[in-house]
Amino acid sequence: MTNKYMYFIANWKMFGGLGTLNSVNKVIKFLKTFKKSKKIKIIYCPPNTLINLMSEKFIKTSVEVGAQNCHESMSYVPLTGSVNPSMLKSVGAKYVIIGHSENRQSGETDKLINLKVKAAIKVGLKVIFCIGETLSQKRKKITKKILSKQIKLGLNKVQRTKNVIIAYEPVWSIGTGVIPKSRELLKTIDFIKDKVGNNKILYGGSVNPKNILELKLIRNIDGFLIGGASQEAKKFIDIIKKTYN
Ligand code: PGA
Image (spheres, protein in one colour):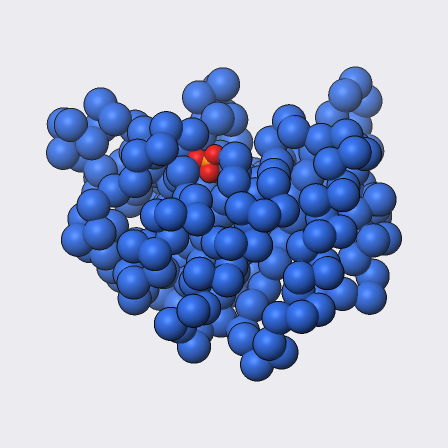
């Protein structure tokens, strides 16, 4: 059981479509019946195409909406297909995920990620800043070095760091069903906490209704960034319920 303020962030990735919004209705319904005393923050990060619709849906609820990435420019530039933080804010996003490993793998550098973080914060979005080591980096035992570098460069000269939530997502754990051993995770999160001070730190990577029983016991985690399991209302609700029970 936890008495902590916990974050549950749904990362829908490219999963979307209006039909899937039914699963969101179920989560809203569930939250109405959930004890008010529970300190809980739910944020949905759907594809950009659904941000507007979702944020309208959540108007009378405590659920918030975020985006999954943004362009680093704060103002208009002639760039076909790009979406900057102000545009996301204008359709109701309050958060944006930056530095997700899927985007790092497709070429986003720490430097670019840093520009994105700064731009997002400047326009008033909160940033869900993702870090994590790959399997080969883990095998080489350079996890700490990698995380330090990602934090140092990604958050370089970032003002208002209280608007940054860190999501530790080991790349080898994303979508694989494998999660780190509890002791190892505890140590890694402590290491990150030492580096960043007061920022909230989430864990992400294959979180599901089964392994949440193990993950929720790790005392220094402030919540979860959930991909696959967030797409189905039942799984998402189970994860939340089991965290508090
Ligand atoms: P997963 O994804 O829960 O499907 O592993 C997590 C993420 O990529 O944020």
